[in-house]
Length: 393
Ligand code: SAH
Ligand code: SF4
Image (cartoon, rainbow, N blue to C red; front, top):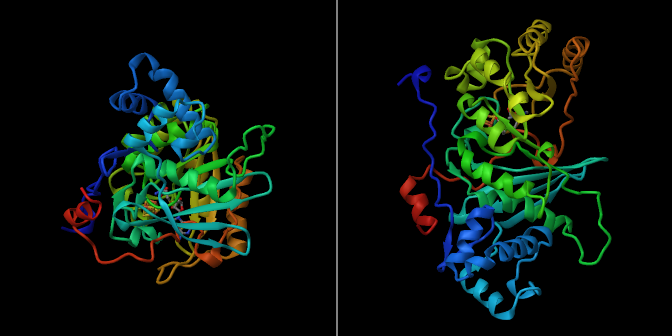
């Protein structure tokens, strides 16, 4: 099969929604409806289910409590019943690195021994947590380290929510009972810009974000969540209507010829198809604007002509253009554009009336910058059967 006709595969292993662990269900990542059904199945009388759901939800997602015994507004017998049927488990942090600039990178182990990375970026007025949606990525963008990783599995909703919770653990961000309400948030924003293509793991990403947005728990508003996609056109409208978060799109080129090389999914849905879909997003999601991400690659996509074409292409779409200086990784086939080139490019965009921030690379010393994530423990490609066996399925 030639490269041009190779299918863009979604053929990755997806684990069952509830991971049984010694017969117990991990309740992290269950939606409200799923948790309610699980509580009833475990023996909660139906007429109490709504109240119990609210109580358990608040303990877990508002207070960050992991031990049923500490859920003191529940009767002792009910706490025992919960402990007999459920666990409250997060993925395990196996390594934590802190950059000279304060960026934190967590290496997180999930069922089956696979690893993903989570990055926390503190800024003066906010803190952004960059989370992963898959182990590796089935797409093979030529400038992205994650795209060179062969092993791929979809994360469960629980593993996605768990990344937010473990960062809050590490930052000590759960509220103290009785303490005055603190409105300053350490994790104030979440971006789905780590490993993986979130729209190829749609259901789990949607359910996880609903848990994270829920006002009785972690309560991050939908405007504080940004999903970044390489351009999975058929799923974009669903992201608007079923999640309603902010959208970022990895645009990176202004002609199909160049975008085909950089972001191969462009062979399936080209620039025109992508833009047609993006025009609908702000209306559908009631969001203000779309972020166009544009990685600056020396001599590849960084000319003045590119900048002018870009502005023309996105005409009529409320947009912000995020210029990302290319972050190198071992063996990467591109170079970062010179600083003057990036500024000249930004200037053309700015004069056309768009915000064009240049993203300062963060955490480069710990390989935490955009596109540098790839689990170091990657081994040879495994079969689906092997991965399933490791996960105990
Ligand atoms: N799969 C999704 C989200 C993860 S990538 C997507 O592609 O949008 C997050 C952002 O980092 C994307 O815009 C991606 O194109 C960009 N990126 C990937 N590799 C990079 C690198 N080496 N340097 C700078 N940005 C990179
Ligand atoms: Fe996957 Fe995004 Fe990297 Fe492309 S840029 S390979 S879609 S993670």
